[in-house]
Image 1: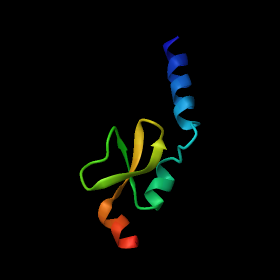
Image 2 (image 1 turned 30 degrees about the vertical axis):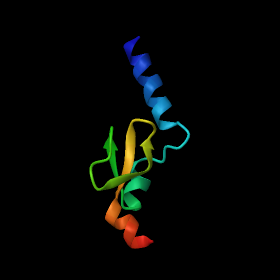
Image 3 (image 1 turned 135 degrees about the vertical axis):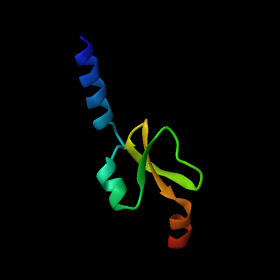
Length: 65
């Protein structure tokens, strides 16, 4: 029964609306982090919504503007 819950949670995390995955986050200069982005970073989107965030450096964001 425990393995069924694990599979259900995994499928839910990987197929949730705005989740793009770690590869696309890394290609765009971000890092996947669990919980919160660290100081000097902002939430760009989600690697696996809502737990794993795709965080990007604030200095990169201001340089592109």
